Length: 328
Image 1 (spheres, rainbow, N blue to C red):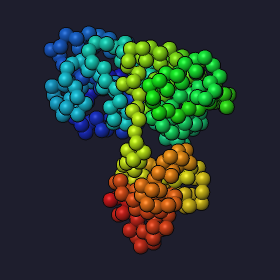
Image 2 (tube, helix red, strand yellow):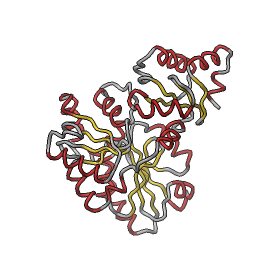
Image 3 (cartoon, rainbow, N blue to C red):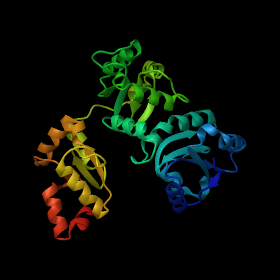
Image 4 (cartoon, rainbow, N blue to C red):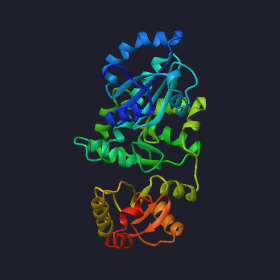
């Protein structure tokens, strides 16, 4: 792990985020006058040497000198730790609770790996897990199916989620034993090595013991996504990125000629975009047709507004207006 760095401006934070795009960025907001910060300062060398935290880099921020960052991340006291993934804050730990911080960083390792570019060598198992957990905000990896769980623990997890009326997607790990074993091997260091495993917003929440404990304390309901109408889901999806593409398959593996051609055009243009595989969600597939009044796929949206399908994109390319249109 790198030594403790220092951030003194938003520009330096942006640079650090770009340089460490493959790691979690941990900001340690501190002040010399705070005795609690002295305690953290004494513990910091051990954190920096912890090999289980090698997927994170630490930077200190003198809170009173960089008020803009305090405001941006809602820092109201010191010491406070803010964990960032590619510039986005995903966790916060206040006070001298370094044990909680360490656990947060370990727990977020899976979220970091799932965020890696799809083409990174050796990422095959994580690519599949990313595809599975990306199908819904709440995803349960279990033995069997929700209708027919193949173990008592999987049955208990399903019962908890149904009791809370949480919409969730499920994947039967018994359908792919190699994948099942490889996922357990990746999470063994910080999480239970048995199924089920519950993912919420692409982050691994835990196994059946964690599910039951959080359920009993009432915390689980707060962490799980609330039921949304189809219209809300569609609005969120089409605004998920400045340029959104709804297609059959993924950019890496298009499942129809129209989607493949569109991907080739966009790749040639150099435009950055996000995509959604409509084959993975029949509700979205059918609902978006009505929502946009456009009966076919692929569909391209810019800043939440429909541009059109492949024919429109081709026409824009031919007249030299594709790049300006997609840049909004």
